[in-house]
Image (cartoon, rainbow, N blue to C red; front, top):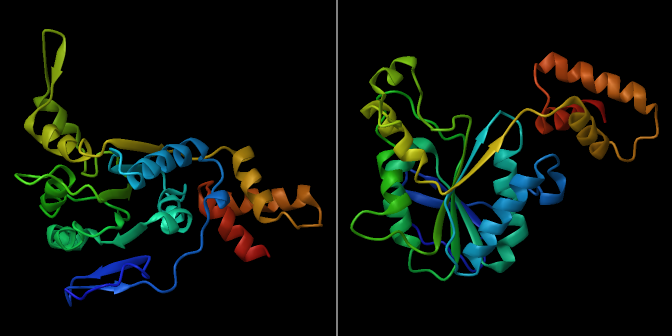
Length: 252
């Protein structure tokens, strides 16, 4: 594995084909103040990250929920806020998680604090590539390193597909629910993330607030702008911060 100079490098991406980390030179400049409508999630993730950078116990984080609601942007914004405090980030694709233990081994003794960023993380029925992730999240014989956390975004709360028939094995004993093996296996992965942050579709007033943020310098008819923004969201079938940004890109 190629050596990265982490004193000057803020982030890297894992390239499995060549088994090396590639330095990211053009970072997404997204800032925490640009993310609207997710104040609770932002506050909790920042608190967790600050504890991590202070050498205190902190949790791996799973950001799950509706598409376009700021999950990935929030993780990327953390790097821009905290890189001067020693935060570094490594992006690893879901298909490359088999290499995760080796990546972690190479950084566990470094002085920087690393967030492994797994974007759009989910697994299909029969996939086993999540197993190396499970061992890194909670360790095996060796404890997980204190300078590495996993922050993942996903549209699925439990990361794995959930079927109606999975519930057939569930039973109740002395008022306690005991899940079947299929559900236990699926829940066991997401349970290793100590911090769960949920993201839901936003209301129309929240959507228009984000639109107004992007169009802060707009001097035209604000009511007409809102009507156009609503039609744009209806055409996409969803209201979200991502759609507000796309409307701004198309309209400005």
